[in-house]
Amino acid sequence: MNSNNSPPSSGNILIIDDIPDNLRFLSELLTKAGYTVRKVINGEMGIESAVLEPPDLILLDIKMPGINGYQVCDRLKASNRTHQIPVIFLSALDEEAEKVMAFQAGGVDYILKPFQVVEVLARIETHLRMSRLQQQLQQKNAQLEQEIEQKKAAEAALKFLDQGLELRIKERTSEIQKENQKLLRLQTELQKVLTQEQQRSNLKSQWLDTITQTFHTPLLTITSTLERLKEKSDYSNESAHQIQAISNDIRSMRQLLQDMSLLRNAEAQKLSFHPIALDLTEFCRSLTNQWQPTISPKYNILFVHFGKPPSTIMLDENLMQSICNHLLSNAIRYSPKGGSILFELVYEPAQVLIRVRDEGIGIPLEEQERIFDRFYRGKNADQITGTSAGLGLTVVKQAVAQHGGTITVSSEVNRGSTFTVSLPIQKFLYP
Ligand code: ADP
Image (cartoon, rainbow, N blue to C red; front, top):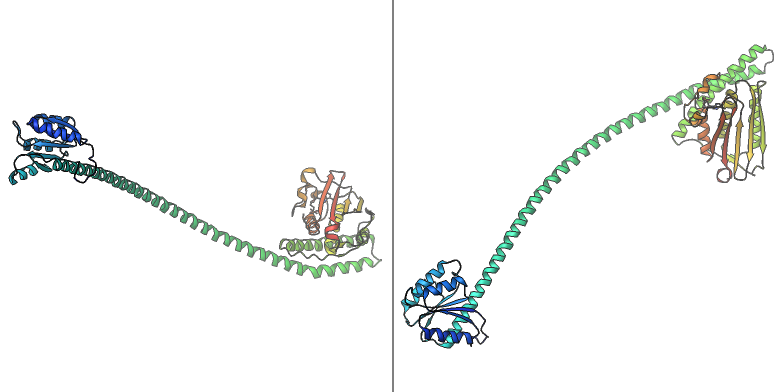
């Protein structure tokens, strides 16, 4: 039975009363109502029992021999172990002063004797519930406080981390800024160097243009004068020989200027390339015929061709002249004892091969890869007379590459060299 008709909650109740009838009555009533009951007959025993095993609620008689109810309550409230246990005073006196004292001593309620069953149970149940709610509240509070503490700690840790991170970001940012400034400086320096290089290169080009233009006309005039002189038959052998020597030197000079200009254009991606339908067999034969009188009787060029030429071959005539003239000129110059030069033209289904073989001094194996490099002169270049600038094969390689072809060399010291130019027919030689 309880006041709000809800089943009474179980609980542990200690009854302290010196009157056995009261004890029995309350004990039976509460046990029936579902509570666990302990009962003692004086204050000292009550305190001892409460400290030993704290109950959920205490019913405490005020008037008892030895220490009275107020003193018991005082001591219970003074102990950490028992101060939270709700105490309901039991008294036969319905006086205001008694009640005030009871509440001052720390009691939560006051039940008058003789006991009214409903009232007793209602009050007990109410205070048990309040006590439990209070405990739950305290637990919740403690939990909340713990959570707040944890949150504070986490926030502090986060702040600490944040500060660390911020510091690291600041440091890294400043490092990056420094690196960036360094890079900017480098970029400026590079730009300066590039500008200087560009100016130098422009100057070189202008200088080369000036030389080429300045020398071009006088060299042409000298060449044509020499040609006319050669035609006159009243010269002695010696004079004719000298005229030929001058003529050869002039040709070398014109060739050098032409090579430099061609390489400069190739470097600037401005190499002129105008393929035309060229009768290659006729072209090579005609070249042979031009060369032969200038080298007779010491050297002999033998031109041969094999295979069936395609109906049309598209080639740049000037570049083809450069290729063949350089290869023939080298074959002659690096054959100091004279001899035969074989000038071969081989038509194959997919390519045409131009091969120049000599029986000259040859090229050491270790130098063969480098002879196509600009200004590279082999050690053997000192054994020959005449100028050698190390540009001829570079020009040949450029001109061949412009046609999509390749050039290879095979050579043996003191036995001779063979240069083979291979030009693809399908890709470049047909229109
Ligand atoms: P160079 O003006 O020196 O002849 P090239 O570029 O034409 O320049 O040739 C580069 C080098 O290749 C030469 O210095 C020479 O050592 C070597 N060389 C070229 N052709 C021959 C050849 N037919 N026989 C031997 N050596 C050659």
